Image (cartoon, rainbow, N blue to C red; front, side, top):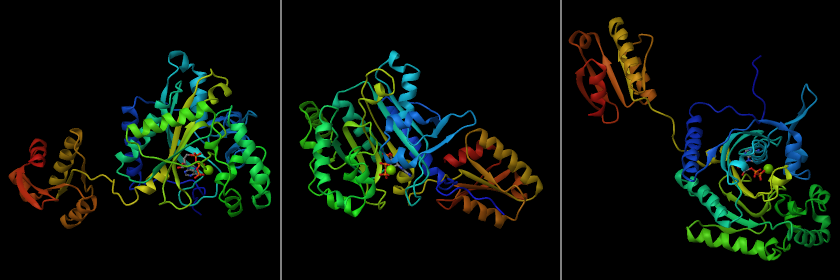
Length: 415
Ligand code: ATP
Ligand code: MG
């Protein structure tokens, strides 16, 4: 019996992979315009890194992590997200000593034990970026503008940007108390998870999908009414900067993020096109995280986007590559010459295909159509004897006779 892959772990096949390459190349190009450098961190980390940073009372740490004890009795976890690892590396290699302001981006697989469905998998991929060392809301505006620039470069009008502020250690506890009091009076309506974390993480109830929690949180106190003066000024300045550079947004005071380390600015890029999987990218400030992980007291801000969800938004676009040329040759001597010609052209950077097996001209032309090659070069016995070939422009439907050598073919394709 054949062995299949594991549920929730996907293969990305040719035909689809070109879309992924396009997304990745666009991210690299756009992020590098904003001064970001790539960092590559491992897939496996000590479990403690995630429980300490993401938070013990979050969905990710409570239920979704792929954790195991390895042969050396170490408790390890397949990373569920990238920020914790990037900050671990930032601290471990003392990048802050070189420059406290680091702009880093990463891309790669993440792992969460969730129920697989469209846009939600157990191995999925994120592209993310982080900036350390700057408190100023200009940086928040820059990160958000870069993210919107990336989606615009892909030609997407969805998703749209929503922002919120979750306050800081000075004002969040006050809000938490107000929200806990509000929810305690409606505790019967809350789902079991939200009941249980009413004291540890009451904010989660605000974006819980269960009908009871939705009902219980109608009219709940807004975090934005509880910000301290500094957080309010930070949020106002962010809005002014976004408006100044024409980055449109809406405010969603109910947006709480599923990770504990967020402070102040939080944001999501949401779409209505992917059903329940509405968040395409998300992130926020994490001004306490670097110190919590044993590093210096430096602020940070970042985001991660789900590549599978971006790919779904690009669903009907065609990204697969076409060869420049297909060489069709009839008879053994012509085939041999065509093979040499193909290799010479490939070495010049021209993408060439041919039929390796000496099939009929009709079958070779079918293969050329299948590849959607831009040009087809036909070398028959007759042409070979005359030292010429027929070059067909497949898009224009025109053809011409040209001398049978790589230079002439390359020139003919430019003409
Ligand atoms: P959701 O609310 O959809 O569960 P999340 O809040 O858990 O998302 P984050 O942890 O902020 O998501 O991750 C950032 C992005 O990574 C999400 O916006 C989404 O695009 C993507 N993502 C998260 N979990 C998955 C998954 N299991 N499969 C595919 N993409 C995912
Ligand atoms: Mg989630």
